[in-house]
Image 1 (cartoon, rainbow, N blue to C red):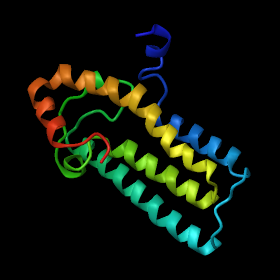
Image 2: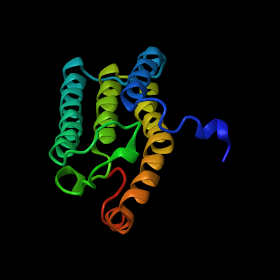
Image 3: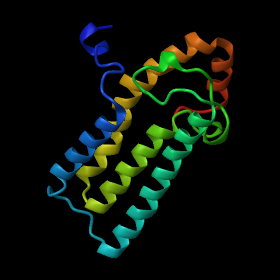
Image 4: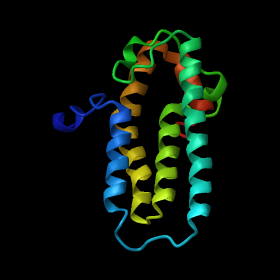
Length: 157
């Protein structure tokens, strides 16, 4: 693997990637085509999606805190426990899924077709430069237990 690409692994905190994505989405929101729907309709959908995203992400944080393991995404090798219950029985990455849902809510609120690329690009970046390196670290730490968990629960949904 090219060392320049691998250099990006576990380097940029996911919330920073999310904020950069949100900023990029806002920057392209004025470009046509624009989704035509009422302000109340898009606000309602955005609030529901955003609230769901925050709930999913906070469920992940809560589970990590209960297990007394790190939530620092840049140091997955310091994980003290393999969390497989609660929201982690549905998705292996609830914090990133939650961020993606919030970004999708932002795209809906912006009412921009181009902004819909934001959550997609976020998910692609996070998968390649955050989740895959985390998975390698968890595999080293938890071996067969993590392999069995990966077989039961999908990466995103």
